[in-house]
Image (cartoon, rainbow, N blue to C red; front, side, top):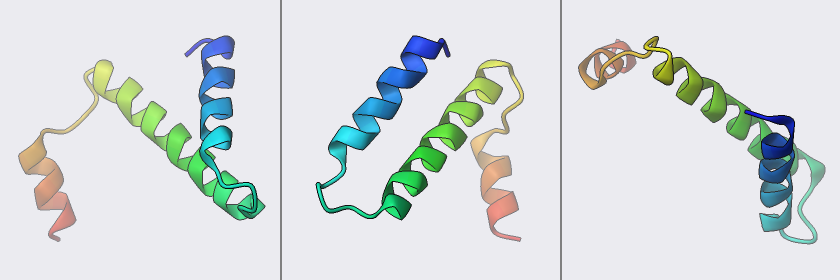
Length: 60
């Protein structure tokens, strides 16, 4: 993700928060965004697991 793209996504997340949202809400959403981006990048690189394997891991 380019720096401009990252900044745009950060601003989108922040704009969607309510005016009285605590800082913790912003941090939670930014962490979720970062983890989602990392997961998508891993998937695109062929490092993901298929649905059946993910389900098996979650049911342990």
